[in-house]
Image 1 (cartoon, rainbow, N blue to C red):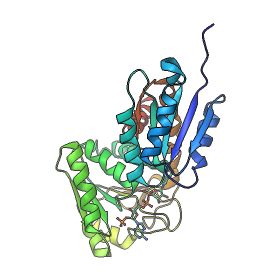
Image 2 (image 1 turned 90 degrees about the vertical axis):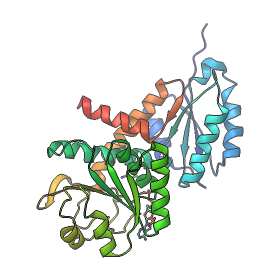
Image 3 (image 1 turned 180 degrees about the vertical axis):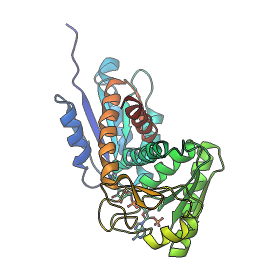
Amino acid sequence: MSQKYKPIFIFLDTDKHASPFDILTVIDLIPDVVVLKYEQVTPDDAEKIIYDAMFPRGPKGAKFTKVFVNGKDLNTVNAIVERLRKIMFPPFELAVIVDPRGSYTTASAAVLKTLQLSMKLGLGSFEGKSVTVLAGTGPVGIAAAWLYASEGANVTVTSRELSRAQGVANSINNELKVNRVVGVEARTPEQVGRAIENADIVLSTGAPSVTLLPLNVLKSYGKRVRIVADVNAIPPYGIEGIDPNMDGKEMIPGVYGIGALVIGILKNNIETELIKKALQEPKGIFDFRSAYEIGKNLFLKA
Ligand SMILES: NC(=O)c1ccc[n+]([C@@H]2O[C@H](COP(=O)([O-])OP(=O)(O)OC[C@H]3O[C@@H](n4cnc5c(N)ncnc54)[C@H](OP(=O)(O)O)[C@@H]3O)[C@@H](O)[C@H]2O)c1
């Protein structure tokens, strides 16, 4: 009799308490799933846990064992993923989902919503467009800036600290072997204005309840801006005048808005598809790149 393997999801979370968000999503999606969760996980912990998960079910069973890396601390999340890449080898590789606090699926959804609206408005793809990612130094902003740059956009990342913005820009340029991402300081309304004055698209990825782009700054500096989008769902929103339910509505003459709840709906759909994909695939790292490809396919099917 051939053995039937249950799907097992191992959550490795860097935080004190593992987020129930993704655990609940997995449980609702896969009725017979078994969830194991580990908290405050370091790269060394991850190595020990995953070594012990790779072998007991044999090569066949390993195909049914999945890993979900989560947590607020992006540097530790990245270090864990790098460690897993290093220690896993055929035929014991496991499929690994990486979506730290929902940031990668959120970034993919935000970028895709702006792409969809750009196409609808007849502005075309991101190739050669200028995009400003406000407060693009958190997990959502970094992934979004990476995706825009990978699609050929010229990207400006802002931060309250010049060195943080430049750090993000340099690492994306180095990774993609391009020179189209710049980091600028944007603390004052004038600095924010200058950061958006050449932008076709502005995506706001700041912390909750922080307004980064006041409406008067958008009106006076954003002469070229056609699309604004915001991932902050907790008022006050990141862009003044935007509504979280806005889905491509003209917010002020010539400027069309996309709100956080609209992005959140696509984010949830992308996460569901990402989990299904990782369930089907025996191995691989499923991060914001996979989330973006999955989201694109959802649009193509729609
Ligand atoms: N819709 C969804 O499903 C969903 C899912 C996940 C996250 N989100 C939302 O996406 C947004 C970004 O998430 P994240 O985890 O990437 O955010 P984050 O790391 O908490 O913050 C992003 C950036 O905001 C800036 N910032 C923080 N506090 C600030 C303040 N008081 N004033 C001005 N700037 C400030 C920081 O940039 P500098 O220090 O470099 O200036 C920080 O790097 C959040 O609003 C989050 O709630 C939405």
